[in-house]
Length: 235
Image (cartoon, rainbow, N blue to C red):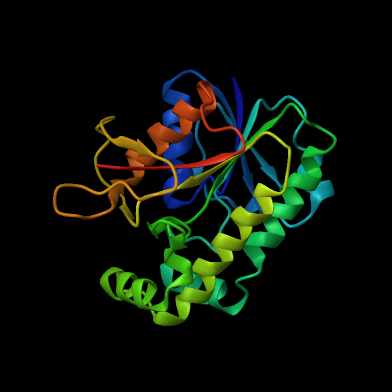
């Protein structure tokens, strides 16, 4: 398969590239400015291309030949500067919905290309009909536990809004909500898959490694199960 990855130097995106290459797929990596990608971030069998994820025309120009486009867009690179990404996300939480609209617009000219958007866990339901992003109490508790400022709630709601944008579309989209606690770790290939509710471990925690998130994403790219749906994973 030909797989495109937006955010290919990010925490999840870089591992998606590794997972895809390990399975023999052809990877096209996208960056705001491919000329600025550092030599230690470049890899064999990966072609780098500049793209503006907020510009439908820029996205449409890179879609030919792609079977699947996986977007791990963030306003910054959390892998290298998490504080900057957090502040950018707080400053303009509408950017996630803007990116979703641009991606869907680009797909109008390439309706057979599948889109997988890596979003947030805040749109998962904490109880039937209520999502994390709708409850300040749940949201603030989660942010406190993750060591994020409570102002980041605006960005969490921004991710939720992006999912709602996708839900209005008949394109071949999939939305991936990672576990609430996601960080670099071990690739086990062993996790559970959920839909709109978080997957909790024996201690009631929603957690996954970035490596296993990449496994789940490439699994979905290879064998789609969640077209026009959201899914999540956890241990």
